[in-house]
Structure formats: structure tokens, C-alpha cells
Image (cartoon, rainbow over all chains, first blue to last red; front, side, top):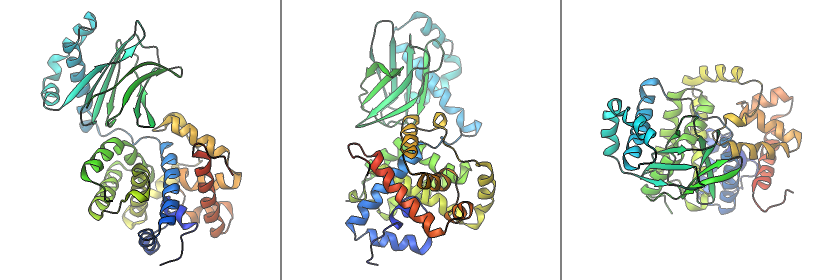
Length: 197
Length: 169
């Protein structure tokens, strides 16, 4: 097939072509740079549309139970590796009994932690796996509704809001690797720190 | 240039949540969505179909996963999912607060608002309303060819609006 794709470039990018027509398009794309560019442009728009979709609902309870445990384990390690606040360490130590299994698992993975640079009265720590599979952010003194934002090259991703606990926490499943963790409140970055993988 | 394994694994880890949400949006079934993501990625990896000239990796992955999910939906085994889904999703709307990426969702909603009504209507019905193009044609009383051309033109215009530094034509 030698004819250019025209409207089919956009329809293909959105998945609205099927069967033989899709195969013809893929064969054409293997040899036609202008149509590749056109499909790539359409796919970049489709990716933006996809960002407006809601996430897939949480996994079934059995699979889901693992990650909060791991998050709790991360909090325990956080408390053990820093003397941030005495009461937080006490809260964390109370959790140890429940998290032996998760701790063992966590200890066998590669993780690191960093303290974010922030204004006085705000203390934020990010604990993250080196392969980008998970991260856990703990903040003391953060304003309500503050979000965690991950900078990845030119892109930035809102990873969600810290909860209203004391300290406030957010566990992120599969954040990927990033260049910088930011805490953002009312449109302003109030803490920032660079992970090292 | 073929995609190397390390880059592929990193991209998958970084974007798995978004890829699953794309598949789930089409299929409305967790297991089927996981299967579609896995099948799409296996197909890409084993077939070596990604090349640098195909554009950025994430949009390519998202498009592949969506095509895989739609192909699954078109298969006879999954038709029951679609019947449930279309009824449940009416009317068409974007919920920014529930989006996987609220910042990008807001940007896309504003870009959609800037489109001519006829193009925005077709895109929202077909993409966010989960209609087939034939269903959109029936709902809007338009010929199928017109639905296709409006969808394509709308997507091209969105690309212009969403691309930084390029004034909308």
C-alpha cells in the first residue's frame, strides 16, 4: 500500500480502525516517514485524552493488602533512620509487630530516602525504591491538601494528595523514577528534593 | 532503532497505572484490562514494532494498549462488557477530579472547549462516551464519513492547541 493515510492516521491512533485496515496501516507506517509523524502527533493527543480518564479501580482486597503494609514498613524504616520527631518514632514503633513480614520484604529490595528542602516548620521525607516501583512520602507540618508532584524530565506528574494524618503520608505505587519530588500547596512548591537511584 | 529491554521495563514501571486505566476504560473489567495491557506489551516487545521515528514512547504504548483493548472488546467473548458499559456511561462527561492526571485532564478539557462544537461533540462521544463510530453516526444523524472526518480534524486541531508554542490555526 503506497497511498498516504489521511484521516485514517487519526482514526488508527484512537483505535477506530480494525482488522485488515489496521494491518495495512501498520505496513504503510513501516515505510512512510510523513505518515509516521502524523500518527505520532495523533497518538500524543490520544495520550493527553487518556490522562483525563480515571484510574483503574483498586485491586481485589487480597492483592491490595500488600502495599499498605509495605508503606507502613517504609514508615518504620523512616522513623528508625531519622530522629525527626519523638512522637512519630513512637507511633511507628507500635506498628512493628504488624509489619515483620513486610519489613523482611522491604529489606530485600533496594530503596533509598531523601529529606526534602523546605521552609521552617515543614519536614518532608521521601522513601523510594531504586527501581521506581514504589515511593512513600511522609510530611510533618504540611498544610491540608498538599500534593506530591514528581518531576520527570520536562514532564511533571501529580502523584496525589497527602492524607490528613500526623504526620501526613502518601504511598505511591509505581511512580517510576523521577528527577525531583515536590510538595505543592495552593499552587506553590513548598518543599523539593532530588532522589538518587 | 528497536526499543531496548531496560528502557522498555522502565517505561512499563513508570506508566503501568496509566496503561491499565486506558484498558480498563474500554473494557470495564480488571482482569480483562490487565490481560490487554500484558498482550499489548508482549506484542510490542516480541515484534519490535517500536522505533524512535514513531514518536515518544508513552503515547505509542497508550495507543497500542487502547487498540488491544478495543480489539478484545470487538471479540465475541467480551460483547457483554460493552452492553453494560455504554448504558452506564451515558451522558458523556470528563471528571477532572477523578482523572489519573488532573493537571493534564484540565488542560485537555480546556483544549476541547476551544474546539468547534461539531468536532468536540464527536470526540467526546467516541472517546469519553465509548461509542463506536457507527453509534456516533446514529446518535448524531450524521453520515459515517462525516463522523470520521470530524473526529480526525478535531484530533489534528487538538494537537495544535496542545502543542506548546504553536498558535491554533
